[in-house]
Image (tube, rainbow, N blue to C red):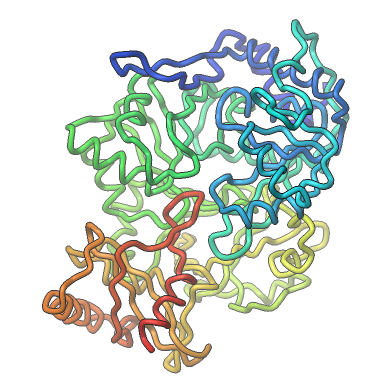
Length: 549
């Protein structure tokens, strides 16, 4: 058996624990509103994967071929992905909510030769045929309409003999996943089979154990679970719009299936937390909640530790599509040690590097750095760009040589990834984050960073969140604080002036926020499409520029 192929882990789990539930998927609701679901054990899932692998291979899909994969979260998404891994083909995953033009550009850049998608996805290729010009084989996950091609269900071979694994190596391309595009055009990140194995090893290091039950708030995480031996509970939600999550469904699923671990953005857990508090509900089965995607407010962690979890704990891992995960910190350490520092404007603590990874901080620059030199590393306490090296670090962006050059630093046979996040190390070896490099504000008086500045003003009881932006020419920008009040309220003139006076007073109490004299009120910040939590400060900066004219 080819142990380098990530599908090997599924085969081994199916042999070791064939009757353990592998996937639990929503299947509508009965007349009383109670959730229905379908379930596959690991033996059934592996057999389904083999059936798809035989059918797709017979249809012409082969090793190394990029396959655009647009299937809703569920058993078919997982089974098709692992079938492609077994074949040695490369699934390409694109966030469906990223916007049509960005989506079309991603398809064009990827140059896939096969396309497996739901009917609605196939309609796009009729509207934008140029983007799909490289595709030779069309497969519909559902019933084909008028475009021809094959039907996924009809391709499946059953009963299916074990499919012979493709002769992949750790360096063989395994999948392409696109960044969220929260700070620019989404970029295709190339994963190898070796990187997938390294990610799984780090997830185990973070305490995830075989046999646990996971409810992932990001569909791509469901692809790691079969290799980890976890039961995956697919949540009843629209993955394109996490902020529209129905918390009652999310909580019902956790309590019904005894979910032990769950990943989600702070947006998801804020909505779920409010629901639990309003209904006096606890989540006793959860051993851990991973909150990630943006800095997590300490008060949200405290809410879960104090009122919702009963023995479980929040963890806030740090990583990126290009390097996942990188560091981790427990909610206990945040609440007992780092939260007061965060509230004073020291940044968000990201914890310590995970074993096997090296993290450094280098001088802030927008220019490429071709080759690593140890002199680049800044001393403890000095703010710079966070860079990481290790087995989970991806090496390039697909067909983006300029972006690859800006984000990667060559170091012999290894690669450092420049995260684009600014931060520093404290004297205990913990990493702190101060905001995105592209969101820094360069004033005549010096550099100002979003996370440390915004923390001061977020303490105001009427403020939901704030965003620091720069107005004017670079290096001489005027710092402007954009404020979103709770409930999305735009204050009347008298209330507005009172709030400004109170915010000014908060800012004057700290050296690093004293220069902020301008305040604007916005009803709802634009956020990223993946997590619905990362503030798109670039868009707010353009808006603020117009308001300040």
